[in-house]
Length: 223
Image (cartoon, rainbow, N blue to C red; front, side, top):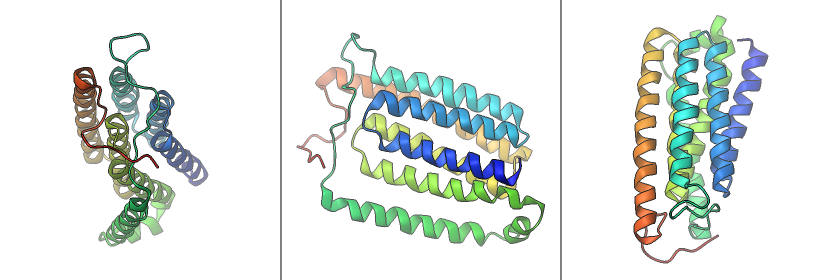
C-alpha cells in the first residue's frame, strides 16, 4: 500500500471509529461499525493479507454486526431496545476521562517508539506503515475513552470492538502483516466475536427482565 493510500485509509478509519462511538442513535452507530470493519478488511487486503481481510469481513463486519443488531432488537420484536441512548455521566467527570485517555495515548506512543528496532523500520522501506501506528493509537484512545464514558452496554460493546481493532492496527504498523501477526489478529477477531455475541445476549436478557440497558441501578445524570 502506498503512503498516500495508507494516509487516506488511516484517516477514514479514525473518522468511522469516532462516528461509531459518538453517535447516540444506536442503529446508525452499529452501521458505522460495520463500515469501519469493512474498511479494516480492505486495509488488510491492500497490505497483502487476503485471508485476514476475509476473516475481518466475515467475523468483524458480518457476524459481529449481526450480534450488535441482535442486541439492539428489531422494531416490533419482543422488548426491543430504545434506538437512542439517553444515558450519560455527570459533566464534571468528562475532563478526567479525556485526561486519562490522553495520558494513556502518550504513554502508549512512547512505548511504541521505544520498541527496539522500530525506529530503523520506520526509517527504511516500512515508512509507509507509519499512518497505521498513528491511527491505531488514536483508535485505541477513542475506544478506551468510550468504554469508560458510556453507560449503555451496547455502546460499550462497540467500544470494546473498536479498541481491539486499534490494537490490531498497532500490531500491523509495528511488524507488518507477517504470519505471526496475522495469527494474533485472527485470535483477537475470534475473541472479539465471542465477546460480542455473549454481550449482546446478556444485554437482551437484562433488558427483557427489568428494562435496563446498563449495569447501574441508581439514577443517571444525562449530559
